[in-house]
Amino acid sequence: MRLLLLLFLLLPHVRAGSTSEAKSLDAILQEYAYRALVRPKTGTIYNATSQLPSNFTGVKIGALRLRSGSLRKRGVRSYNEFEIPKGVIEKPYVKRLVLVYQNLGNLSNKYYPLPNYTYLAPVLGLLAYNGSNLSATNLPTLSVNASADPIRVKFSDVKDPPLGAVARCVCFDLQGSSNFSNVTGGNTCSTSTQGHFSIVVESALVPSPPSGGKSSNKVGVIVGSLLGGLVLLVLLCLLVLCLLKYKQNKKIQRMERASEAGEALHMATVADTKAPAATVTRTQPTLEHEYAP
Image (tube, rainbow, N blue to C red; front, side, top):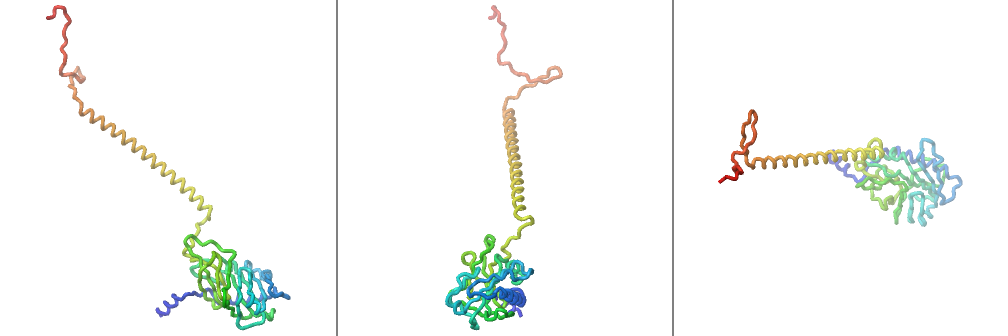
């Protein structure tokens, strides 16, 4: 059991969400996309978003009807975010096919949850169906394979990955498994088959914004700067006071040393008061008299 669990964890793909829910969604979107194909012109893209009910708000769908031979020889230069090269073939072979476009918008994570990852772009889908009967529902998807150049998905709405994080392409196949590959040009993923695609980043690398958003961040920066400046000013004042006190103490010490090194004076008592008095008179006084010898 431990060996089986280890092998499961080491698989290069992970299973995304509920496959049955995703397939049910595909069937519903196929039905609504076909409703836009009223007397359709081959090679014309039909926007079928208006056909969707209100509970699919934010989801976009489209339909493109093509001849199989034309798709293989010419490809499709631009089908919304998809670029389909020459050499694409479908199995089983049908004379006409319909490529249904999906943009799941804010429902991406609901139908294609991907643990430990955050979506930087909505999930886009490209699925091929038999285009012979445009009133048919619950049609099986055709197997589409790009034999030469890959199909490219150029996402028009991609969030910037956080600093230090690496964005990855993710492809969900029709069995509900997801495979990862590198993003090219900042917004382009490549595939050789149909399915659902998006750009993701590991959730652990996406910082959680604090409550209040950017305005709170700015206020926090301003308050922090003011507090930091105030603390620095207080420290500077304390340093100046310490220097002044140090200089004053040094001056007092020098004066004390100078007083101790000087000659001590003799103290004499006069009445009740002591006062310094000279012990020796250097020059004796003489009377000025004309008869002095």
